[in-house]
Amino acid sequence: AQSVTQLGSHVSVSEGALVLLRCNYSSSVPPYLFWYVQYPNQGLQLLLKYTSAATLVKGINGFEAEFKKSETSFHLTKPSAHMSDAAEYFCAVSANRDDKIIFGKGTRLHILP
Amino acid sequence: DGGITQSPKYLFRKEGQNVTLSCEQNLNHDAMYWYRQDPGQGLRLIYYSQIVNDFQKGDIAEGYSVSREKKESFPLTVTSAQKNPTAFYLCASSSPSGGRTEAFFGQGTRLTVV
Image (cartoon, rainbow over all chains, first blue to last red):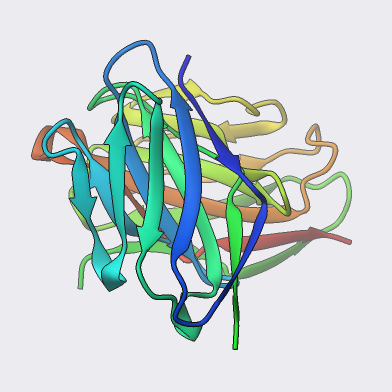
C-alpha cells in the first residue's frame, strides 16, 4: 500500500529565506505525487503534481518540487519565503491514475519577520 | 462556477444522533472522496467512490456510511457508532479519466458533538 511521510510537523523560516518541506513516499508502482496547501478553516488547494513527466515540477506561488526515485522523495521548495506562505502543507500519493489519494500528516510552515 | 459545495459549514450533533454531511460537485468528476482531519493527524480517508453506485472503505470507515446514487452527490452519514466524531470533514473529487488525477476540495464541514 502506498504512504507518505512528511518530516517535521512544524517548520520555521525567515522571510526571504529558502523554504524546504520534506516528503518521502512509499509505493509499489510509479506513483502520482501531489503537494497541497491549506489555510485555516479552508479546504486544500493544489500547489503542484507529478505524473511521470518531468521530474522537476513547477507549481503556483513560486513553489516547485523534484521527484527523486532513488531517494523516494518529493520535497517542496521555494527560493524566497513570503509572509503569505504561512499555512499547512500536505504531501499526497496515489498508486495510479484511478487509485485513492493518501495524504501525509502535514507540515505547518511559519514565516518569521 | 464549477466546484465542490459542502454544507453546512458548521454542524452540531448531540451524542447518539446520526447526522448527514452534504457534498455536491458540478465538475462532472467520476471520483469522490471523504476525508477526516484532526490536528496533527493529517487527512485520513473515510470512503471513496470511483463511479456511481459503487464505493470503497478507506482507512477509518467504522461508524460512517455513504451513498453514491448520483454522479454529483456523495453524502456522508456519521452514525452513533462513531465514538469520536468531532472533526473537520473534507469532501473532494477527481477525474482520472479526464486527466485530472488531483483531488479538488470543498471548504469543509466542522462537526462538533455537544
